Length: 205
Ligand code: GSF
Image 1 (cartoon, rainbow, N blue to C red):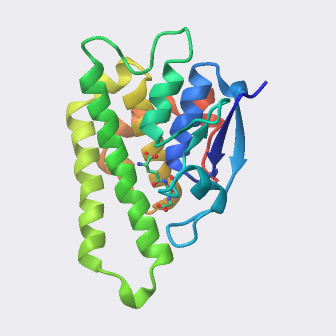
Image 2 (image 1 turned 120 degrees about the vertical axis):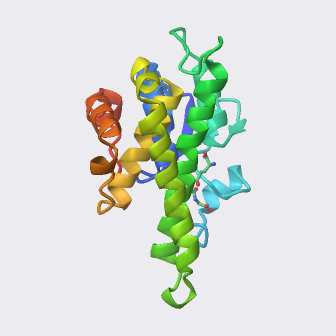
């Protein structure tokens, strides 16, 4: 039976990280999804009730406590299962969290770009700002490609989940980007992890 409620949109890559972790740790049944539609300029009243920032994911626990943002929710849910933690507790912890944070930076830039190109009126758009966000994505992917392939392949944990959801979101929102040609190591890694049921069941829509 579900004891927690997750504010959810099938397009949200930050929500997807939570869904993937739930799947990987066998906790999917514990969480009911509350579907919402929102943008920064059209917030959801339901979400605002539980998160003044108006953002998803937010997770309401059985006792009414609300957790956000995705990092806090992942940390909480990872403390709620008996398997090997997906946020390592030993020496690898800070490195893996830092890689997860870099994956979130890709997502932050990609989501801002989406708002900039989809929501902002054309006459108010700022090319240089868009280019700077795109460069953040490029630099982060170049770093993952050149420095992190073995680390990523070693375990599907918090860092790998974050990057997999980020690459999935780039495919969803920037299909023209062509990142696979420039980052073939990441492309091979992503092709592999995309086969996981947790990734297959949570495709953005
Ligand atoms: C970012 C969540 C976010 O931007 C986290 O949870 O890690 N640091 C936060 N969520 C977007 C939806 S999405 O594209 O995943 C959101 O809620 N946007 C509405 C807004 O007001 O920014």
